[in-house]
Image (tube, rainbow, N blue to C red; front, side, top):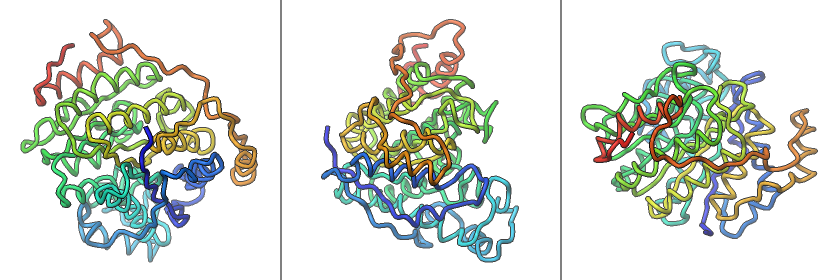
Amino acid sequence: MTCRVALAWDEALTRYDFGHGHPLNPIRVELTIALARSLGILDLPQLSLLPVTAAADGELSLVHTVDYQEAVRRAGETLTPDPRHGLGTSDNPVFAGMHEASALVAGATLAAARALRSGQCDHGLNLTGGLHHAMAGQASGFCVYNDPAMAIRWLLDSGVERIAYVDVDAHHGDGVQAAFWDEPRVLTISLHESGDTLFPGTGFPEETGGAAAPGSAVNVALPAGTADADWLRALHAVVPALLAAFRPEVLVSQHGCDSHALDPLTHLMLSVDGQRAAATALHEFAHRYASGRWLAVGGGGYELVRVVPRTWTHLVAEAAGSPIPPETETPAGWRELVRRRAAAVPPTTMTDGRPVGYEPWERARPGDAVDAAVVATRSAAFPHHGLPAEV
């Protein structure tokens, strides 16, 4: 299917930079855009680049307190840590222009949301977004302003009645879940490495939403070591049924690719091929359950050369309805850019050479840790949506 895609992009988005040695290095986005451009994805007639402006104070206030916004400004001007607001930690070191850079990322996601809502596009993308850990009054997990939560709140205020958020980052999407804990119009679904082994230590199946919105939060806490086939089995065992029951008007998805086996911060074992299959599935879900209205953002991903550029280039191509054959070679010019900018050995093709089949869910496999996680999620969440757990 060919779809109209609006990709929010400006080189200034790479100013969201915590400094030398920090895992969230903006070179990952620079290399992604360069790879997509060199493969001709950005020249597709159905894809347009959106201009980006910083989110205004009122837009930031859709999620964040005024006190926190002032703290972020102050920290970026004085370079003074503010531990009360999570600023100046090893995860979130202060940097000059922190507020401006963070507001620009948020503005990019809002631009994609506006393009989607206005009918300018079918799918809106911001690869620099997905900063899903930021809380109303605190930075957390490399995230200063929570752009997906902001976009969801803006869409609700614009008249959208039901929004589903699916987060496939290796880390639990705790900030988005917290923002909509008591909001029955938003369904948050997060598939992530269990909080028993990974930050932020939350996202367990029993977290199912607040008193005003029971069942609004769904969490699949996967064991460390989960690889493509089992991860995809879990995705399809949980997400489609919930989307069918919830009937969202818009699907918002967060595509952190730190679930890859090479990621230095996590313990899942996906490949670029498995992550490509996830993007394909979410694209299909958008058309099947949300009339094609899809807002997709980036997220985590700390293997800067071999993983993030390929996975997110696949995402953009998939969203445009022009998927890249896995065996496609990476362009020679892009490889040279990698050597020059990252002093690294570039991947030569767009695949890790992994199969992406999975065993569809019928019943749990006895003694299987991934299936046990799925059973826990279905048992906790499905009844809230009138669905049988069928474990």
